[in-house]
Every structure is written in structure tokens, then in C-alpha cells.
Length: 264
Length: 319
Image 1 (cartoon, rainbow over the protein chains, first blue to last red):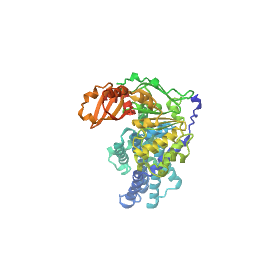
Image 2 (image 1 turned 120 degrees about the horizontal axis):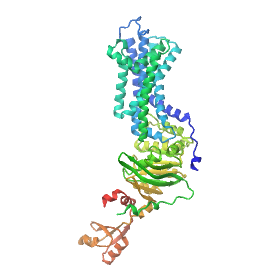
Image 3 (image 1 turned 30 degrees about the vertical axis):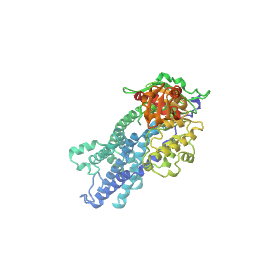
Image 4 (image 1 turned 90 degrees about the horizontal axis):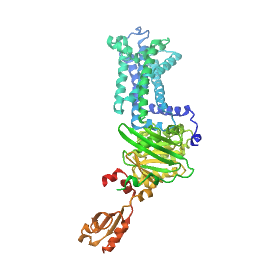
């Protein structure tokens, strides 16, 4: 009798959107997020393209792009990776103090927590991508047509999924105290070895070899292709997809383990 | 002293005829590795009851609530919540819960958290009603990380009631509250329960169970060792306290008093004498017969504390 009285369980996107909205809002209030993903990339971009002389003449080309354009994509990628990984500490915190578990005793489906984290991580890359682009436009007069600029932002936002998965994985594997360190360490490893600070061709060979395996170098290549008016390279897409699947599977495995133990 | 067998689960309040079960456990057991957290517990909570789950730390209270909410799978037995599997009951939106020490997400404002909770349930209560009921109207704009322990407990209470649930679980809801907050919290809770909802709360504060619940389930080491109204549980303990003033006490020694029938223990502070007795009637008759010139005689029944200690392992240690 009770079973027939219970409300039908209709999947609805409204609860998911409400949670997503809250996640985005509170991330935008987080100073660490703003510092890592917006202020640092913009400052570094201005520093290395307009203040310090890095020895790149106006006619120099890397991958067919001038230094201000090349490094624009590097810093946009750097900011976007930080934004995508920014859920590591919140996930670790919310597992520890039980917010994740509190959501599990609401009608919100279990997977909505994880998918909200991924979608908000992806959306949070947009401010970084946009603002680094603006710095290029107004500091170095980099002219990228609006359609190209929007395409680049869209492609890089979508391409940030493996980094969002990595952020989740860090949040699920490490505790609150070490998640921050783990996130920063992997973030900088990806950025430095992936050639975001010093272009990959200028890194010593053994380092560049490692860098070519990392998703960060392919992520930046993805952006450079679109900025240069080309279609993304299938190899870059494949490598990023492989990383997304691999890291996503690991994160999902840890999530299920947590759920079974009644913790998350 | 009072053995488990002395308090069979049949002392449970009779189920209200025709009232459906809010929660049923049929021989539910749960182990964590080698530890038995729940040991084949069977229970039935009727719709509309306010039930306290009372027990020392590690008694299995949170495990029981975790199973009722579908957070934990029972190792053995069957659990039903509102007649459904616990997972389906939670998904249906008719259950609200306030878990033990679940923090709030940093950076979120109180009003936003209430809005989120309302968006998660199919038939939420009006926003203002929730805020008022949880005493949050003045805190709407505050961020979660700036709230005191008691204030964040109230936000979590608001989240638990936002969906206008038929059944509410509260796991140690007043743990971070001061005395005044606890009182006002239980006032709110009682009004909420009076609307015909089922409320199940875990606590280790005996006075909360005594004043708020109409039924108490005493858990100890994963078993139900007591089940009944607060008055019924107290009545299971036959021990009484007899107090009187006896000006001649100083000239006497304890042996006179210890020898009286029923007396378990004697405590003397100056002229004031306190006897613990298993048979207060016989003890008092013997006091009179012995010609002891007592004044201000007082006989008190057991409080819930004593009943609780008698029922749980705390009693074993004290004995």
C-alpha cells in the first residue's frame, strides 16, 4: 500500500541544475580559485610577453604562431587546467565532513554529485580562458576573430575533462590535508613538463619526451590548432580522451568504494 | 542486575491499529570486518511516532540510521523504510535526514543551501516557513564557514525538513548546541512532529530522550536492550532512593543502616542520609520499627539515567 502511495521517481534536471548553480557560485567566491586560475595566468602572460624580453622577435614562429599568440594559448591552458582541477580540495573536504553523504540522503541521484563536480569544473575554465584572451587582445593586440576565439574557448573547455577527472581522483584518494599539496604538485608537473611555461621544443629531450605523454601538452596543442584556424589534431583528441577515460575510471572506482563504505 | 531477559521487546508500545510502519527491521545485522555493529535487530516504528535511539557510543545507533537511509547495506536481514527499500524511500523525497557532523560546503550562503534543499525535493515547504521553523531568518545571507556549531546544526535541520518529509532522521542533532539552543531546537522539533510526522533521533543525552520521545529504543553493543515509553523504561528499574535527615546519625555507624532489608548502599553527609534500596517499602517499615528518628523522609524513583545504566553495559561496569 505504501509502495503505491510513494511519488513516482521521475528523473529531472532541475535538482541537478540547482546544485550546479550553487557549485559555480561558491567556487567563484573562492580566492584560491581566482588566484590560481585567473590572476596567475594573466600576470604570467603579461610578464612573459610584454614586460620581460624572452628573446622572441616579432617574426619568430613556434608551431606557426607568434610568441604572443603561442604563449596566450599556453597560459589559457594553464589557467584552464587549474580551474578544472579546482574540485580536488572541495571533494576531499566534503567527503571528510560529510556533505557528500548528506546529499546522498536527499532525492538527488548518487551520480549527480560526481557529474556536478565534473560539469562545474569544466564551466569554471571559461573565465580563465576568456580573461587570458582579453589580456592578449588588449596588451599585445593579438587579433583573433570572435568565431575563432569562441571556438577555442569551447574546445579547451571540453578538452579540460581529463583534468577535472584528475581533480576528482585527487579528492577521492587523498585526505583534506594532503589534497591541496597533491593538487598543486600535479598541477605544476603538468604545466612545466607539458611545456606551458617553457615551450616543449625548448625543453631538454628526456623531459620533452615525458611531456609529450602528458595530457597538458596535447591540451595546449588542441588550443593552438584551433587558434591557428585548423581542426584539432586527431592524435591530441585521442590522447586527451584516453587520459579522460583512464582517470575517470579510477575516480569512479574510488567513488563507488566510498559509497559502499557509507562514507560519501 | 537487570538482565536483558527482564526486558523483552514485547514491552514495545502496541502498534497503533491501522497505522503503517515507518521503519521495519527484520533481523538486520551489520558487520564491519570483525566488529558486529548490529546484531540481528528486529524493530517496527509506526507512522507518527517520535522515537529516540538511545545508547552509548558504539552501540550501533548511527549504523542503524545508516541502514534505514540506505547509506549502508545490511549484512543480513531486511530493512524497509516507508514500506520501500531504504534507497527508494530516500529517492521518493518523503524522507529527510540530518546526519551526524555533516559539514556544510564552504562559500555557500544559508539561503542558497535552503534553496538547494528545496530544489532537491518534489514537494518542498515554502522557503520562509523553513527558515522560520529552523530559526534561520536572520542568517539567510551568512556564509556556511562563518556559522557557529549550533547555527550550522540549524541549517542542517532546515535541509532535513525542506522537503516536507513524512519521516525524519536526526543523528545526534544537538551535539554542537549550548543548553539554550538545545531547548529551542527541541521545541521546534516537537511542533514539527505534532503535524503527524514520524521522527527518529539518535542521542546520548538521556534528558532529550526522556522529554521529547514517546518511545525509546535502547541500543547496546548492536542489540535492542530496551524498548518502551520513558515511563515504562524507568519502571523496569526497581531501585529507589530514600533520603532523610537523622540528627543522631553521627553517633551511629553504617552497620545499622546497611542491615536494613533491601538496602544496597548507604551514603552519609553530616545529618543527611541517603539509602539505595531495592524495596523501599520494606526499608521504610524497618526504619520505623528500629525507632530511627528520621525527618524529611523522601523516596524517589529511578531516573532514566539509572534505567539506562541498568540496561546497558554501563550497568555492568557499575555493578
